[in-house]
Length: 267
Image (cartoon, rainbow, N blue to C red; front, side):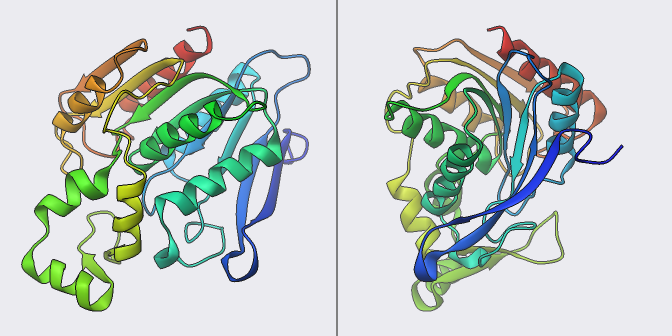
């Protein structure tokens, strides 16, 4: 079966103007005709892309249910253009909004992994400001890392890393998931401070389901517990997975993800 026959469209859109312009790669699975329901929107993590296990399994779930699915790569990630070092939360949020503006789904379920959880929460805040925007039926967050620059990175910076940020504008950190080091720039850190969400009540207007591993070495489960405190007005479910790591990509983790997303359709 060809991708076209399967209702899948691969496309690129340009976001930004002038020197800030970059091409964003999108994979859009259309819903089956007359099939009601929201589109699943995948929001990946820092240095991840739309070909990862969870993103592909979300697309497969959409296919099983006859619903739409939207995946894309942030600039500097995967198949998209732009430099990774230019990336900030504001920049990647702008791209997420542009993707929704291009596809124009009427209703969505936002599924954010790690940093994508931060993008998801900022995205719903921005959508709630608009008169014409897709309705958000639910949010599913996997090992969410909102405010990670201020909450998880800054408090643990070494003197050498602080000096590198000051003098070079970035610092590098060993990655457990790639031979290439993680790079955190001064722009990312400063922009992160402007995009913090864990500073007051986060109003999403929909159900929120958080999946969090208790053996996550990157985002401690205490961070998920803290996030719940800022979501008092919504129907929030927190699932702690005792032996779960940060990726939560094992078959049993994927089943929990699918269950949470499916529950969001009818929440």
